[in-house]
Length: 211
Image 1: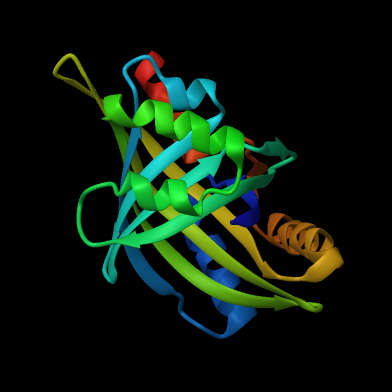
Image 2: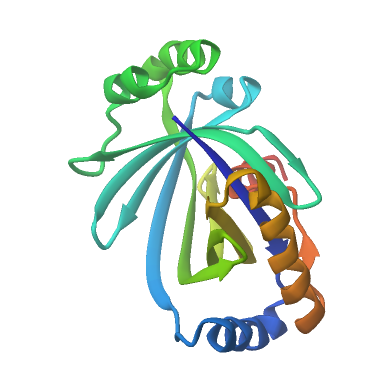
């Protein structure tokens, strides 16, 4: 199990070039583009959402990953949540492997009970551009995500844009949160319109279905 800690910032579409150039100048690197296709699963009655968790199957250029997360807490754009991520052989969930990895009894119980009824609810497809930033003693993975959330309801396709910055702490000890906030403050001072975002991509998918 890992504790994911990241700051998420909503990025105005017209400020994508400015944010990109800021990271290029900050790191001396053009950034690594990574296409990500993600499928989210739950029961028809949304048992996982009610249990404050999310289940994702992700296709990357390197292969497939399944991820089970708790929603955790989000304040001022800083998200903190439990996360279990496991490579899988192909485009299918391997629930037994996740249950074996999940060391949170409540989360595991929710997943175990939901497993027989899981269906795909929505997708998030986006291009992620990644930079690795050193700030004080912290290592931070910075990303700009551009794409969309997609849900099909009764044959009708609903879409919502994704345009955001994520700053994820990779190493930082007790001062990691301070480093995340300091980097976010620097970026916000340079790029107009950035704003803290407490809504995860999974939560946006559920909200799109409810529209």
